[in-house]
Image (cartoon, rainbow, N blue to C red; front, top):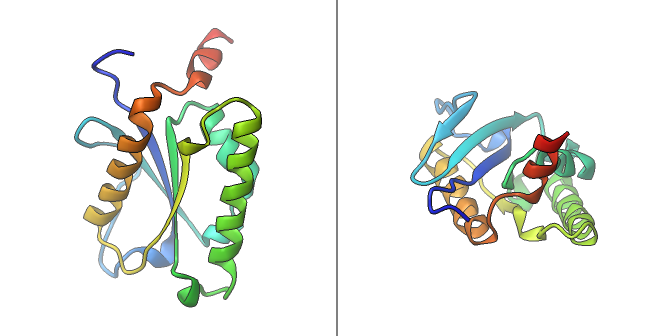
Length: 142
């Protein structure tokens, strides 16, 4: 692994988790030793397990889903449903021989852009020891 390896983190988040007046930029944002991409969702419960797998397959080194606190979800069980989908997708990654630690979930509400960047940084620290996503080399070979 190169000492210059910078994990690429995709952070998916429920639009209701962002504090009023806050803005997360589209596209890639550089952090301290990592790159992040933020994707707003209508609700985190709408993400199917296959979408997490697709993001990993497309080369994300880590994917973090930010869900509303369980008692604050507009769909009442959306956060629980989203967490269960993450658990299922993690089991699929394990079966495929890809580290399930590349996929995470965290609760948050009324968050600032700085807090989202902190979540991305925490995910980057978790996946950096794993090295680059092995799917990157497969994608480049195709």
